[in-house]
Length: 124
Image 1 (cartoon, helix red, strand yellow):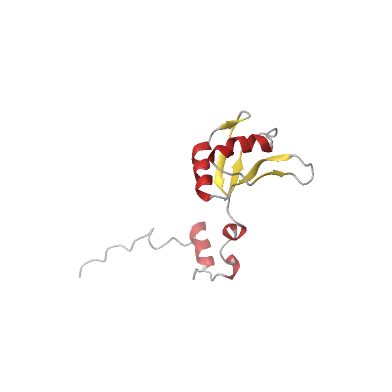
Image 2: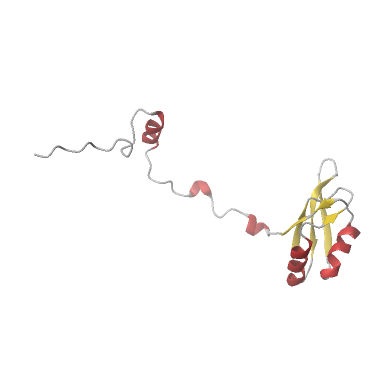
């Protein structure tokens, strides 16, 4: 299971994260995200633990633990498929709404029927 880690100090090394996570189980890899133009670390990264139960116990136990002076925040990372939006928003049908009527209501030219209820009709 890949664990997303936020709020990493720039001087945190792979050995530091391994030392924090290995008491909970096997750490397969540690990856830091860097800026492509400057090469500087962005302050987040990933730890890959092959056993899901060990990764979940590490997330629960270590959330907020300080490493090199910064409290870490952990989340289970999602695959690209899970992050992707469901469907194309433009291809979805629009609701049946007369947009011009809505604009008139907002501008105050034509009040909405609920704003001006009909007057009581006189009894005959």
